[in-house]
Length: 256
Image (cartoon, rainbow, N blue to C red):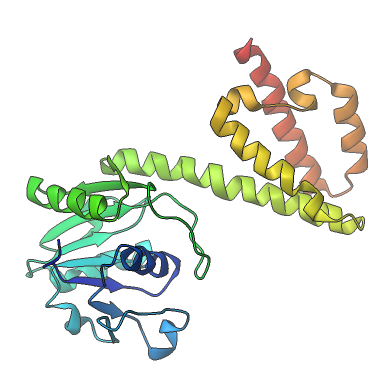
């Protein structure tokens, strides 16, 4: 892997963490593409990394990560339609055939990335897919070098994983937002819920989500549920509470 020249296209959250992950394992990205000089703000590049606003400067790379929007993958990957570089997209919801490059693969890490927020990379799962055994072996070797946990998944499996990731991360975080807004409305410090948020996630991992479920709905405590509904004046929030409560209540029968 040391002789492979790596290029990264994009300056968003995933690109920031990918470059940091390489740095954490003493491996530099050779070329980093951004649309303009301002887009590199917040990145700390190793001396070896060359910043560029021209895709042509990535033509000497062997491995190219497209850390860009799903809608841009097809058009950007065409730059390597007649070039031997292995071009990778990093999307959970996009099939491998969206790539128009000669060699293609996927390197999807199902994690919530925010630029500037450092996390531990070792042991993170990475879902890989490639168009040949040789390219698959390259991705396995790369993942092992970065100390990531390899999960070979095809495009259909990855799409379904991505849906689950959205429900796990984005939907739960949306509920955190609703709770925080509710508490601020009544001058209650939202940090009171922080230990609960941490324990909820930990318990879901330790016990499994089905066995970690608690609260009035799973107990069948409709008296408490009715009290809560009377407190909620916002009809959108009331509808959300009612729908989730009903689904949790109905899951009692499946659990029993």
